[in-house]
Image (cartoon, rainbow, N blue to C red; front, side, top):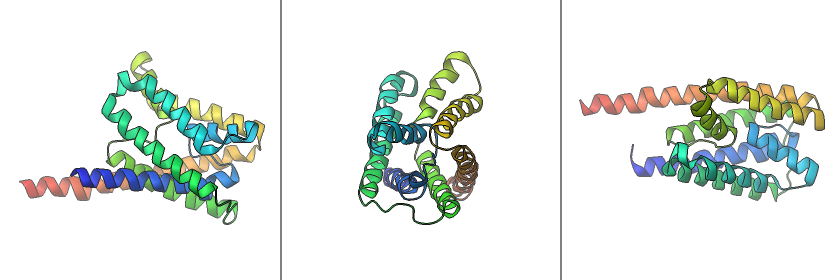
Length: 203
């Protein structure tokens, strides 16, 4: 992959992730993941802006995690988180509120978020957040990352449900399911049509 393609995927994926959160998910207090859940919780309890708590949380995690994931991954993920946070800040300043019903916004948010994160994975970055903690713990205590991610996210979603509304737990799980399917779909399509095609041409 060319540097231009990686840079474009990283930037577009980060913007799409921020748009999905700010326009469709956050207005209904639906978290796209653990870090987003913490941002919603902090906004609800302490009136701290979403983008500020999201960026700060990720920055602190990345500062700790560089020994395990390497500086290059830290820089790409920090860039992704910064662009996402800026997008959230810009969109939130417009005070648009919910664009539609919670079900339509949840579906659109999950689809756009999933596509955005798939672009981040393709570019070699991640959406940051709880995945950083999971990566470190997986290496330290040898527990499967899927189990760790589920436990951390479930604890955060449960906290949101208790603090704000129990229905958020259901919305969060549905959003996670849809976005995960979209991430896998586009990631597989990319590898099948782009990488395999390039390998075939090189032969």
